Image (spheres, rainbow, N blue to C red):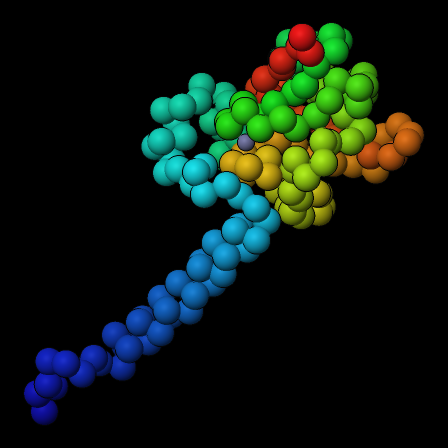
Length: 168
Ligand SMILES: [Zn+2]
């Protein structure tokens, strides 16, 4: 029997159902991003981000890569000032919370208020807490529980994902 044009085959129907479900969950992710206060101004395409950033910064900020330890001058930065997101300039850390962790990555015991959001990632199979800029969503690093007091936290940041501004 010839199928009328408007009625999809069972297979087409199934494919449609699957894409609807996938679409629903993708949208949920966007809704979640909005709740976690991502600035809509920074919802850029991959191409737009790539044209704004160096390749190294792009890989870290937008693809969650990790820079080589001791590769960033920001690791040795000891002046008073503010460390900002290299993606959008949002202030993330004060120099007063920076410490030398010996890891080769700039390390802080506390971010500025509401500067970063976290999520759990499984890149190394063992769950780790990833954190990113609350303004543009750019990946910054991972937070561990072996930092100094008063928080006991170690925000292990990629230097290429930061810029530094002296207080003056
Ligand atoms: Zn940012």
